[in-house]
Length: 152
Image (tube, rainbow, N blue to C red; front, side):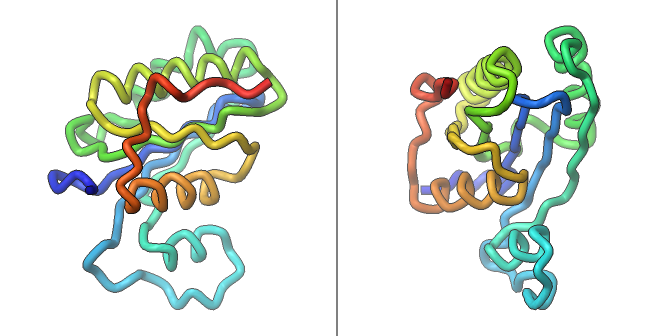
């Protein structure tokens, strides 16, 4: 059962030279925003039951391990960690080290915030990652953080 305290989901993609983060709000019980006729992934995500509120990418390359935490902290500043209901992380990409950093970050957040973490073994765009995570969250998937592992 989804967490009644909030309906925010966080997505992380760290397997490339860009560190990409997005946050989405569930529209459960609300009318979806947008007409759904656009081919844009954002519109598809909106018509899928959630709206991406914010998305940001930083070109960090090998500096992910040094600057990733401060970028995530900056991105999450307008939000409360308490309002996070689920988290999705890409578990594959061009950089296995980057993927490992993202998975460890996601697992740590999931453990500390007591929210489900979903590892998606695709190098998909953020809207697709959010869609897959959101669907699992709605189905009541516990998304145990300790089972999310990098894919080689």
